[in-house]
Structures are given as C-alpha cells and as structure tokens.
Image: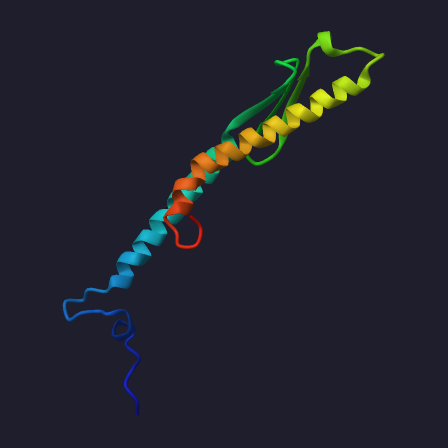
Length: 118
C-alpha cells in the first residue's frame, strides 16, 4: 500500500503547516475580486465620443453598448449628408478610443500583476 499523496511536499509546505501555495491562492482570489470590481465599474461607466467640436456626440457604456446619439441641427444639411456620416463615424471612433482608455485605466494595474498579462 502506498502513502497518500502530500501536495505540501511539492509546494514546499513546512512542519509548521506553512504552505506558500496558500498565500498565492489568496493573492489570486484577491486579484479576481479586484478584476470583477473593475469589470463592474467599466460596465456602469458612461463614455461619450465626439466629433466636429461637439456637433455629434455618441454616448455608450464600458461594455460597448451605444445608449445615445446627439446631432446638432447646425450639422444637418440635406445637401451634404456625407459630412454628417463622417462626423458620426468620427464620434463612434472617439467613443471606442475613450472606452479603450477606460478599460486600460481600470484593468491595466490588474493585468500588470499577473505573469504574461502585463
């Protein structure tokens, strides 16, 4: 009959019941909690992208949903639809860039603490 497997022999557990893996596990759990909190903050955040010095505004949340589009009457010209289309595309691009900044701000420090993600 063989002895039961003792994981502390692999992970350096000592006679005092110290197991370095327990500390690592606690750190991973703490990082997971922080990451979940950051994801909730991102999802709840309101982000606005603009174009044409604010003539077109697109608002969304951190998860990518568009929640509002605001277009100034000053930019609505039936003879020049292309400019309005370009401004909407520009506002959407600005919104995406601002959302990326938000995600980097909230998640960046967490990713930096995990090997291979920083």
